[in-house]
Length: 477
Ligand SMILES: Cc1cc2nc3c(=O)[nH]c(=O)nc-3n(C[C@H](O)[C@H](O)[C@H](O)COP(=O)(O)OP(=O)(O)OC[C@H]3O[C@@H](n4cnc5c(N)ncnc54)[C@H](O)[C@@H]3O)c2cc1C
Image (cartoon, rainbow, N blue to C red; front, side):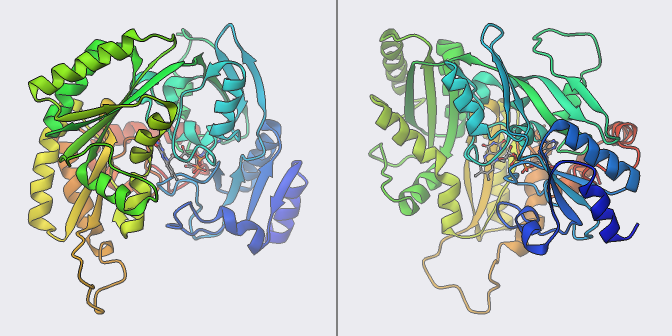
């Protein structure tokens, strides 16, 4: 079919919006960080799951590749079409209804295009908590969160997006609608189809709605910033806090001194809450669903004991909501502060928590030896084993020579990734913890897979998407 005739037949296949001009399509063809730029025949914005099914059937019939897109905040290039120009971007942004809240079942059914922040607000208005929380929450969608199995800061207590979802509605690559919108916490009556779609980054089907778990709202939250001498001490301290506070421990984050220095330098109004500098810090949160002072007393004695044992060298507790927010702001601004310092290379890795100190020691030595011009800005969710192990150029204070390329890190990116990821795999970790593979980590991930695993993954893809139309070129090579 001629391109113009094809567009007209697609236009008449569904209600909703269809963007075909260069200007209309432009915002959908590049990502949040403008790292990738793609092309597409058009961008479709359906109004309902039924519209999505009509569009997908049309694509299946005309063998047009499809690229699902939510808030386009993904960090691995999964929502951007390639440069070929033959794909259709399907934006789920207009599927934005909260379909219902079941307070007795503690669940909420929302459409895929609902912004994460709106889902949190809907839960709050019903007196409940939807705990998924990340810095992009004002722009990212529930569909995108599930497609990437997003994590964030509260995974330690509530789990990642997969753990927060009980059921899904999915349009398959042939245009059928799978209604798996069940609100069941136990259901052993089929293969785990839901879990196949969660984290598949739009390569197996389009998520159109989900049943999400809700929780009681915490009424009493305390944040603690503690200076720790080393990552090993941080892990020991995590175990002490965890065994004393169990499920009240909602987050446990690690930051190096460099993180705090960058936030202090680049984020207006920020200050160091602890006097002397320390090589490492942990920030953790204790939350309870009842008002009680016992928790605070217990926390103070725990900190005193940890100081006595040398696990921590200093600490401060929030005594008000303003102080709680101020301590968290330090952690939340690390990425932005590193970006303000200059170009960086990001690694979103996870490791068994017990192996994190060993990994950090070996990796620091290897990087120092092979790339002395690089410094690592290390932070992340120690409580669930996920580190953001990001590289910047060492700040020298002297002007860089004019002959130096605009982004001197770019040339180092590949060998640096190889070094870091080889060490991650040696330490039994994963090269993608919460950001997905997209195109960014697709080939590297394939390099570390066994032939058996690759064969299993490819046979799932082939079985569900035989014509390879759903987000081609993402996740699997
Ligand atoms: C400032 C910032 C902070 C972030 N912090 C975190 C963090 O702490 N933790 C974390 O895990 N992630 C974080 N992220 C990345 C995170 O993955 C995304 O923010 C979010 O989960 C993606 O949602 P989205 O709606 O923007 O999806 P998009 O970016 O639009 O898409 C992401 C992937 O999902 C697919 N997809 C989207 N919608 C659907 C759908 N309905 N059905 C099928 N496939 C779909 C796309 O094809 C693509 O492969 C951050 C990103 C930014 C920019």
